[in-house]
Length: 80
Image (cartoon, rainbow, N blue to C red):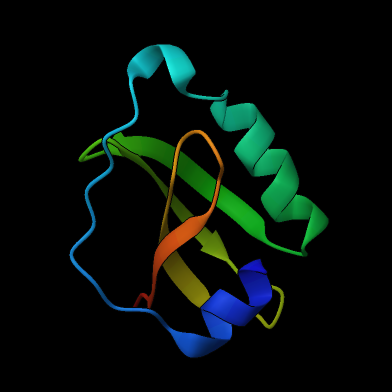
């Protein structure tokens, strides 16, 4: 799922509306991304979503936003 979203380079204005009590730990997102071959540099909260700066499984540098409850990828952009 994550690799497919990264391959499509989704571009959108993203905002999440998940109550803070329903957020899963960022460590769980990091573990999920690492299982898919990502090397995570950082994960932060941005506009109600998680934003991860990482290198994906193909070696591309990406900035990706995820739903903080489901970890569904919402926006994945290549970074410089």
